[in-house]
Length: 196
Image 1 (cartoon, rainbow, N blue to C red):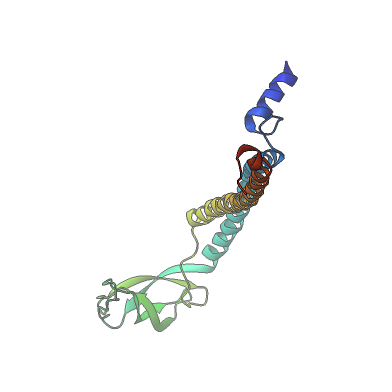
Image 2 (cartoon, rainbow, N blue to C red):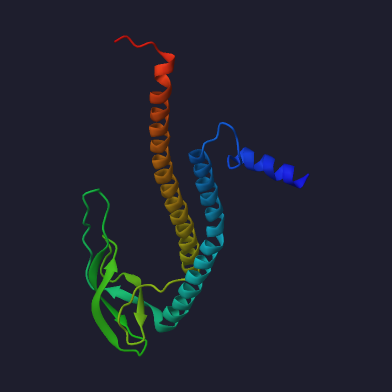
């Protein structure tokens, strides 16, 4: 029962022997099946990449959170409204004053929304010495980076394998066409009458 079942299945997927199936057809089916197997094999790889990136990003988030403090800055000037070419207002850097974690006052430039007025308080992130830093990576952002790394790994594997299958199929189709042309050159004189 099992040998018959396996033989039937191989014929159905195009790998087994068949009177109308040429070696080039079997090779094409083997390449497609191998590509499908490799796509499924890429799933654990994508999960592993996702977990690794997530672990690294979570560690980076913890470090950044420990090395930065959320503070406030008071704008010293009113921020003019400047429009970009697409009609949206752009964030600009404006003069402001803030207090460092050690208690000293610093003056510098902070990102501010257009139209902000002097005296307005805005949130800033500071390092331990009181210099401005980018907002630290949150745990959710770190998790999202891991998910996206896994998705991109899987998408890259699928794209690469699809490209390989397309290239192989193109070459096999050229082989088929040249085989058909050779067969027709051999058979055609027997089917047609030629006048000299």
